[in-house]
Image (cartoon, rainbow, N blue to C red; front, side, top):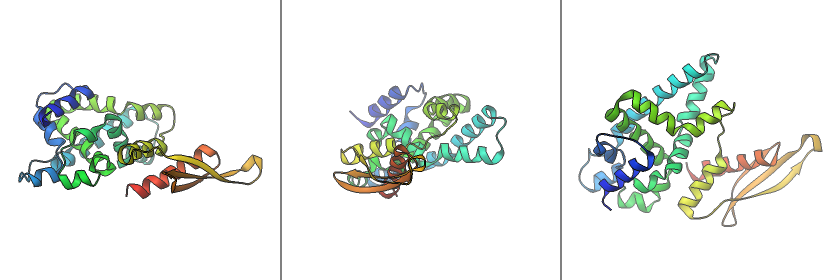
Length: 231
């Protein structure tokens, strides 16, 4: 399968009805690939720049219209959570974007297909391509569909930073292993306990966390591991 066919396969999988598939092929082309081929300007950095701005506008407009009673400060925080690297990488893992990216040999060997920063940049580049191709209204429609899991969390009253899921997707893609959690200590009386959790990969501890419940402690351990493994 050549890269044009792979791009079309991605567009079919994501359900976007587009006009110019070459824009998305460029969005899925990392600088490392372009430089190896001597095509230094045919990569996704400019589209990433544009997509970042378009995404921020779409999310800002959605939050402004949907939550009329929230202050500017709370809207700003929600927007930052929605467009941050962790949220974009989460979407990229769900769409399996890594398999569609054109990478240089060195970047591919070093695990670029599962690197959260590279994946989040690619999502922004794809949004930039989408905006140029179909215009703002259609782009907004597709982006909000893409964001449905996160928007559902907002409607439920909490935007979860589900680091356990992020860490599992990352570790399975990068290392072909599933993280294992264990509670290593409990402190305090029954009505006010604090738990310490540890997360392991191939029997090696990679993160610890504390919380008022076992689930909270495991999430904190996963966050620590995520930040350690994906600097």
